[in-house]
Length: 416
Image 1 (cartoon, helix red, strand yellow):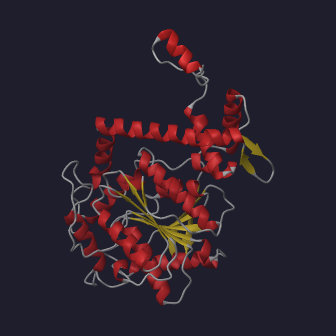
Image 2 (image 1 turned 180 degrees about the horizontal axis):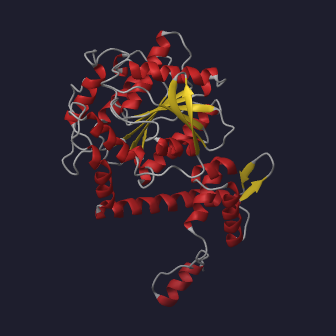
Image 3 (image 1 turned 90 degrees about the vertical axis):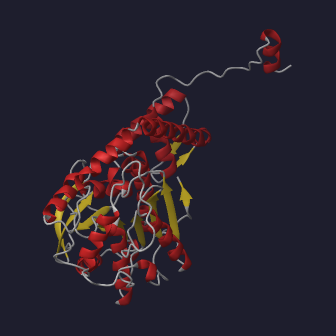
């Protein structure tokens, strides 16, 4: 007779043998540390991913092994590998952490905490347009939005002049050559390398990479193609510094995403080497805004159609929004590098991301398309408190590392 049947006979309750509970001293940080190391199979990369020092990460793993009473990872000077016990724990720990994150997000969403915080973050730029008499008010509001957030711990920042373009260079380690070019968003009329330090630092930490953020010229004082020209010069400066093109990743959020593709189309026209990968975060690609745009009513959208049109008009200054340099949906993207495209399900520009993924795939580009359940545009800038943004940057960091390692092939689309 098995134990379950025997217990049922005694009590009539149908009970089975109860397994002993996990040690009370095991904490979530132990499990997150273990999962990071198990997925990276490298303590340095895992430490960067978790924004902790490598010695601290090693202590957490040793503590977890002592609490469990078994070895989870085998370490040597050349490799890290899972033991059978570690392999048994990995999938279960992943599920536990995913379920916890989902529970926290659902609770916050019901409580409205995240929505209120996102709305408050966007408030400085609400209703301001590029056509306002005081353009500086719009730019100040944009800097105020980004100024709310701190840089990632352990990332240094220094000024450089990249091909004549004032820029900032952010790196988790001083010896790293710049391999990521971040073209900031802001509708081509606002934004700066200084304001984008927080996002650049998070990307630098997640990808264990040095990130260059150029202060390209802004419209309306410097309309198209000024931003493209400055970005091309910054990219060529990276090449001149000795970094192979195939190890460089171009990243852009919002308007910066469209700018990334404008730069690559310009490079292709001039028969210059393309980078090894592209990351497009909530990209703004079609500046005609002729198609239908879904603006949510609850909560209030982070950006309005009037703002979008004013930004595009200031940038284009009479140039056609349908030209292939301006609009990647009109360009032949054949031969372009692998793309990681990330968008939010409630993003006002979400259709741009979908259309770009379909167009690029049709041109034979290797596309990884990720959707995240968020209601705001450009959600990556809120990585310090929005779980989906932190998750997205973790995936972005993995993409950067794959390109740096020469394995830029990516997965296909998924919804998170």
